[in-house]
Amino acid sequence: MSLLITSFAVAFAVTVVITIIILPVLRRMKAGQAIRSDGPQSHLSKQGTPTFGGVTFITAITIVSLTVGLPALRSGDYTALLPLALALVYGVIGFIDDFEKQKKKQNLGLTAAQKFLLQLVIAVVFVLLVRLSGNLTPNLYIPFVNISIPLPEPLYLAFAAFVIVAEVNGANLTDGADGLLSGVTIPIAVCCAAISMLGAKASGAGVYSSALAGGLVGFLVFNMHPAKVFMGDTGAQFIGGSVAALAFVLDMPLVLITLAFVYFVEALSDVIQVGWFKISGGKRVFRMAPIHHHFELGGWNERKLFFVFTAVSILFAVISFFAVRQRYLI
Image (cartoon, rainbow, N blue to C red):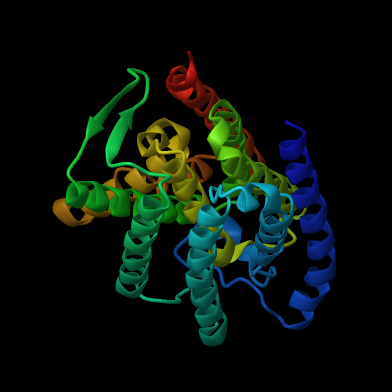
């Protein structure tokens, strides 16, 4: 427990300090966020708010994983290093996307096809590495009923790649209001830390989860409405990669259905909206997708969005913990 508290506290402090240092630099560089003209009109006032802020908590989490998590690494427990590696690679994709947006001075970076291909290749490589490390089996653990179903390796690989890419994009879609993605992800990270404590072999995953929670709480100091800085795709893709990777190194990816419930709903609302728009010839299910914009256009302000969506995430994190807890009961 003390190791997890240390991870949280150090990540929080480092994120706050780095953000204080880097904010004036981002302003001088005019690294401002370009706001989509087809989004909520209330967001147009955010034009020019510094982005690339995700590098602050990414740096903090990396430092914690390689220092506080060093004893676990030395003992052969790579459950902190593996999520960090995947998240960093996805963070690089996000950084390239943010950089392209800055260069073009519009909210369009890499194409959807380019991002998807990169994300897919990375997901496949990650799953193979985790299998080789011995931290993952092709046995699909079913939460709540506490059983595992063996799957053929190719089928499991395809399933795992799909889940990882879906999580990364679900996180990216959730990052559409001040503080929203951080608020939703903190309960997920805390739940992963608690689960890692149940499974003694995964102390590294606990360090990483706690660092993720601490870094995001530190970032919230500057990202709560009205946000002084945005994390950008750099931070959003890093977060999505972190959450997906933690579920796999803990060998229970299906827990993401409840654990990352908000990501799932955000992504599903976008799919439904686009699909129905094409099928119906221009009709919409929601006022705007993803679904947090639907509530915004219905009169919710960004603070209400943050607190309601975070509360929902806390509820599903508690449900998820009890869904897998029996796996470790003797």
